[in-house]
Image 1 (spheres, rainbow, N blue to C red):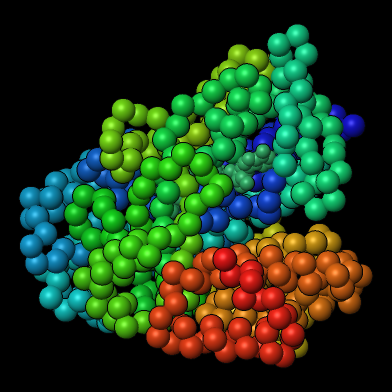
Image 2 (image 1 turned 90 degrees about the vertical axis):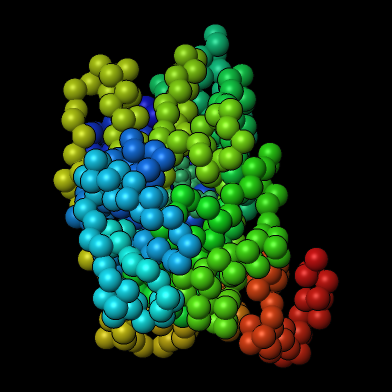
Length: 504
Ligand SMILES: Cc1cc2nc3c(=O)[nH]c(=O)nc-3n(C[C@H](O)[C@H](O)[C@H](O)COP(=O)(O)OP(=O)(O)OC[C@H]3O[C@@H](n4cnc5c(N)ncnc54)[C@H](O)[C@@H]3O)c2cc1C
């Protein structure tokens, strides 16, 4: 049995941020995550570090939080953030009155803006629609959510924090009506662990109500699925937004070697069984083409979706629900934290940890806005060419990941899941989506004695299933041709004869 002061359930940005904050304040804690870090909404988002401009008109409080946190994260997480800048483009027919309100609202909450002529905007982004009426520049950035979570968790670990990934909390332990611990199950071996603590933090995003219900409590939420598609290269070096009230397919964000375009907003009941529908891909493509015409003829390599953990509101349109966050005290030894944004995760963690310090009668101020995240020295960031300096045997050509990079992860964390390597190195996250490098990485894992050959086949099968789920909505043109080549490698050369069967 493990004993600690605080158990954090959920290894998304919120949970990892809380772990780091507690560590910096010297409070013992354990984080438990059922997948790898960023397995929920955090890893399924656009990777936009909001300037707040998107919410300036509809949700000024959230907009103000975003601009403040944007400036902080540039400093403390510089290797996770690319300072791309962002444009809000006004197309013919888009409301000029909305544009005036937008500028005023940005000004009201302190978001700097600069109005650009079409010529100037086109100089900055060559693939922009040449018929734009104007563009407004804002300090949007691109952020890597996987690195962000891992470096927050690393900062916690360096100060004695405990972390259990691939462990699902299956039970909240209660004594005399108070939560005293959790039971968690290793999703690989089925082994069970018991952890006891003085306080439990439920940072499980879209799963918050389910987890709260294990303790006999509830978290009223609206779950809004959003889908995104990934282009095979960077069509823009800046974030491009449509200058109109937030709606479908109005944003494209550069992310390392690719671009992420989205999104949709569809209310769902279950955060687990979600998938991208073809009509969503069509909708996003058509809308993004209005801003970046080349998007429609670019190869799309994947689609994915996530669920926004929004506070419940009696509003039909989930886009109108506040992006603010809330801490709920269930008054039984469990605190839940829901809502918010990836961009405001640090602030959310700060407020939660202030409350925890209060509960424990501990005086320790928050320093997460000043202390940089640990572990950033090893990272190169964008452009990829920076990685070429230290190249030896390349395993993933799209993202320039070497054997050495993979061996380092294997030695450090002993992974038994491919995502553990992917999230830490970006292996398989580029244009071939792991088609050519996954079996090589599995070979290295097996060589290192971490998995047996039978396990490696099972891991490969489940990877191919997940990969196909993401690729299926984008199967047309060149992407379909490449997929057929990859299928012939797995079926014809690697003799995975039942490959087709997995594709259901
Ligand atoms: C499509 C989409 C696009 C978005 N784009 C942006 C953006 O560009 N910028 C931005 O700032 N925000 C964006 N957001 C919002 C942002 O992603 C979320 O608000 C934020 O990531 C939520 O983080 P979280 O840690 O609270 O939840 P999550 O990231 O969902 O983390 C919850 C974690 O809890 C784990 N968990 C659940 N149940 C259990 C259990 N029983 N045991 C153990 N672990 C469990 C899950 O596996 C998960 O990893 C977007 C959201 C979506 C859906």
